[in-house]
Length: 200
Image 1 (tube, rainbow, N blue to C red):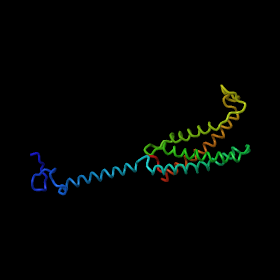
Image 2: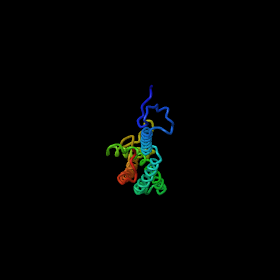
Image 3: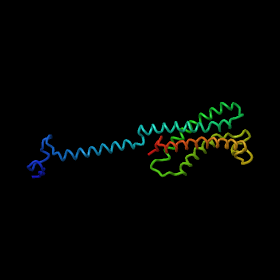
Image 4: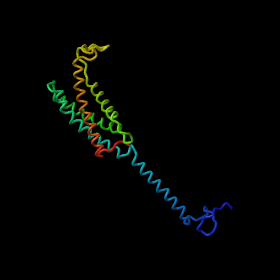
């Protein structure tokens, strides 16, 4: 009554009353297969983990590539910008060092933006570069000594920006384009050569 027939044992028995050592082989094989499939799924999940140790290594590689490529590209432009300025060599060295750090951060962010599961979008790539260029360019402009505050008025040609500030913006913009443009180019090269993997 209420017993289930287990084939291969010759009689109808209740599986719950079977000794541990006499569990039917069919049930053991099924459980083993389920465990194997579960283990494989866990391994795939670990490989695809976006916060795994391997992803941290990729971020470090991005930082190195960005710092080297951006720093090299910035060096000649920053030298020309600071040529003839007071303590220009020291300022050139400082700008190059800080630019390398900025390019390292840019490369890490660039990898997160240009995703593996997304289509290649040139507008997105240009947008990331443009955002960094704009922020760095504007942050390096200093107001002239002749500017009046509240509201800010610096004179010709634009009122808010005078010629000296526009010149600063031009040089800073040129530096930033060289800095982040070179870092983005180096990152795309590393993606194409599979030196660095895109973020999943």
